[in-house]
Image (cartoon, rainbow, N blue to C red):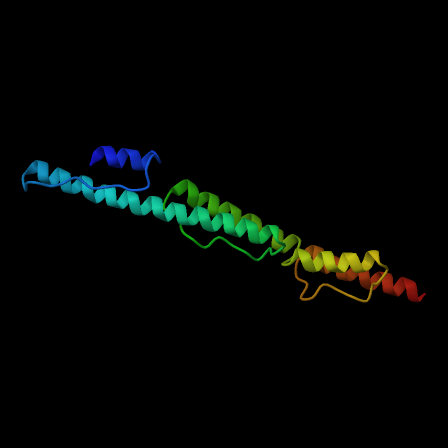
Amino acid sequence: GLTSFFDFINYKTKNVSTIEVKSNDEFGQISNAINENILATKRGLEQDNQAVKESVQTVSVVEGGNLTARITANPRNPQLIELKNVLNRLLDALQARVGSDMNEIQRVFNSYKSLDFTTEVKDANGAVEVTTNALGQEIIKMLKQ
């Protein structure tokens, strides 16, 4: 019943049970209302947990160099919704200012370090990607002079 619910919302247990309803009077109606809210809270926490899990996975993808990853799961908690939106805006800004694939940028920089300016960032859209390609082209022009 209620003890199980409080243990659940305080993260002491992963399971929650509802209150046994034994009557149809006011107490039965109250019990039914409590049960509905217990189940709604359980669904909301499960939804939040899924969103957090996806957020962690998205960060792993970004750490691997992919700046196109976004959090798509929708939490129920308003603060988690705000956090999701802020993180996605951050990723939008990084993609616009840097690019889509940090590994591709690193590959081109490694070529430049080896004095190979014949390569470029494929499908350059981000500011760093576009600037990297422009630098490579300018260096090629300077070397031809």
